[in-house]
Image 1 (spheres, rainbow, N blue to C red):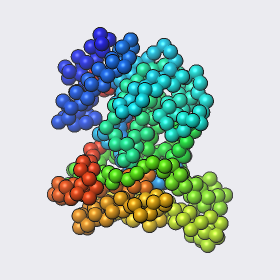
Image 2 (image 1 turned 135 degrees about the vertical axis):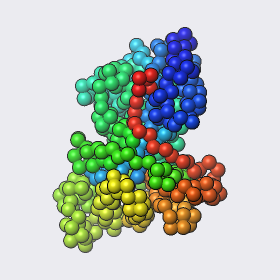
Image 3 (image 1 turned 90 degrees about the vertical axis):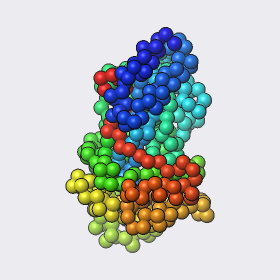
Length: 429
């Protein structure tokens, strides 16, 4: 405990209050002091012989526009949020990552073996091993680390807890072993590669980028090696709206095949035109050859391609609307995005469970409650996780109360936008 006393003193004396206020809000200071102190005490219990830990945070993210466009090198708008994963981490001498994460079994990953382990697919160990392997592949240093993690990013909520974890581990490796040399874009790219190669999920780059870069960002993935990232100063509250995520209590198990089918089918359409992804295909060519594409691929692939072409344009228009402060235009685009996801992308409920449609019911209820104001849409990857709603402030309390009668107690979460991504918590931050 002696090695942790200085960190605990800095927390209790307000040494981190500046960064806590920036990340969470001034009215959450005491809560965050308690949260981080508990984490440090846990670290001391789990690693009694460990070095003095350093503190880290990586946020969850909310997708604002561009539903399933990133894996086709399209455009998105997303934002990091105040819900985050935090870690106390220190170097160790055993060349292993030893991980204690609240609510999960203790794990130890030997960094002398960075090969892909098929038995680790869809596990935390795969993300750690993959991140370490890609760090080394790109010429950066890695080494042993003792890590304690605590999270309030809702699992299975579409707030991207997996991407937050990848950014957290990447930030820890960057700071412990590379003097913080990796920029947020590179940390995001490493996280995506780890998830693709080691975790076994063919995700795009949007989740990791939003978690790593932070703030309200519009991203163009046309060149995935050099994505164009632009930050926008936007606060829904300043325009009289509350941003809610509603957990619809859908079952997120066994959905990898559902997620994977979307990029697979979109790429099948691109392959008809001898291209890798849809962003490389002119939209007019797609519509000119619609009958032939349908015959060679499938009806659902055609519908999902149509969604991409329209959604990619909407994401660009939404970014412009935010820059111009056009809230009405932005909300109209959000509602159109939701309709397109439901009708054409078809990621509202899994195909193997058509009688269970919690997200569909939640969207129906939200539209009814909003009475033509605000906007609501499926959130994130879809298939029954969460919906997103922009709710006029004068309706917010009523909206949340009525939605929770349908989706359950504590299912409505009011989000605030966090200005930065993965970060080490320091007094100077």
